[in-house]
Image (cartoon, rainbow, N blue to C red; front, side):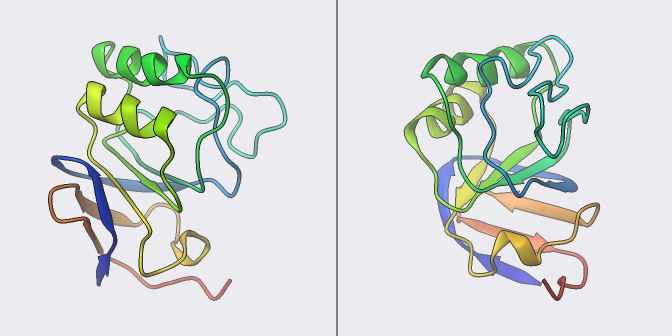
Length: 137
């Protein structure tokens, strides 16, 4: 299934979809050495984002979160790509400096995407190829 959106950070990447219903703070919410979400009470607490296509509504927290995304990339623990409902400056900057393809404003709401489905994100064209069925949520 072809899903259109808006390209934020250039590049193309494939991976298994990891969907968060909650925003993510990369500063103190994600361990830059392991790629594990450590924010207490977060729905994905204890989950590794390494190599996934990480879909979440938007980022939250300090501008230092951009550098955490960059550190994740340098340490080999970044997501393969990022999909947001609405990109904001912290996550967009981190994706760009970290070389992580990113799109937002997808034609299908993130809540309808199923975790674990194989997807390809193309930040150059602002599209995502989704190889599965949509959720009824």
